[in-house]
Length: 131
Image: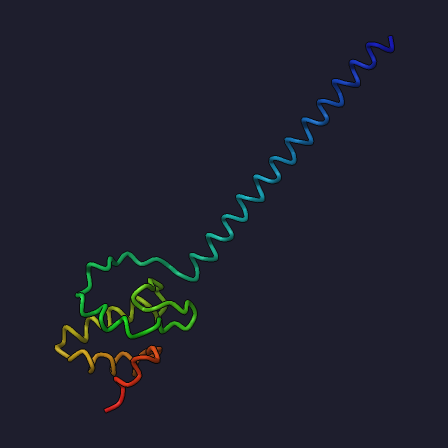
């Protein structure tokens, strides 16, 4: 009789071990999924993606944009690399630069206009603001 009890206890112990391992595995998996979702949401909120493609802008737009940082003051990216949709950020600045160039303003004039509206010119290009 004791032999049957040992086998029964051994099976019970194994089943309990399997249940604990499944619980641990599911808990770890759930934690990873939730953590991934939180990270995805946090990065997506700070840098919303905009559907504009760089090819939609004239190359001169990027020449001017290369002199600025993003005006949103949050992402700290160079304007040519930023895609944030903040009202004082990446895509709005690129649109503004593109519009001013289309109006026929010279590159130095566009730099001054962008600085007046958004700020965030790189220190190396501050000399362009002097008259």
